[in-house]
Image 1 (cartoon, rainbow, N blue to C red):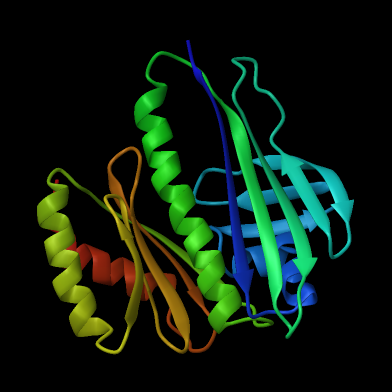
Image 2: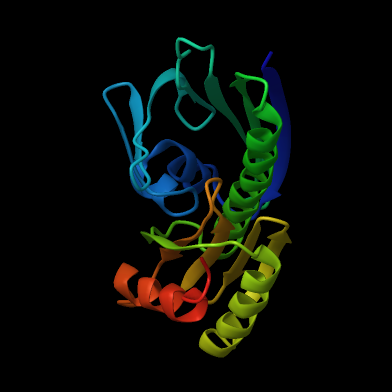
Length: 227
């Protein structure tokens, strides 16, 4: 069976066209809001997120205006494609239009599509936050896989309490059933419900020396009783 999908989003940000282009079309820029570590070179976009290491082919590149890449079709028809259109506006603002499309194979596509949709909303919201509060800066991505979770309602309660204690001055800028995201003046912090059960921390640190081990300890201590 499977499911073909496409979504379009548009945002106006108080960032220059150059800063927006850096965010969407360079490895350090993508590192600062998307997920994992990224490289853009030799006509490809490569990502490393845990054991997931996809390589996408760049299908359009017109500097400061248009950037697109896609995964190519797998034997079962699966693929995902991203397209970005950039337009400068007055007063140093920029409009960014984003199109995400693809195909999910199989009869059980619905659960994966829900997780992808909720995750995609988080990433787009993070990009808006990044271009609004951190334009022109690059971050160190921190990715941590925490314990497997059996009761997500209880896990979110524990996480909320621990986050409030650890990051008392953080501003929450996004929340849905699978994700929560906050920012300080030094970093963006995101917690996600992994598709196969673990909680995932996917942060972007602009200033400071916090490490993946620091957040591994945080997740293990906070959620260690989960199974």
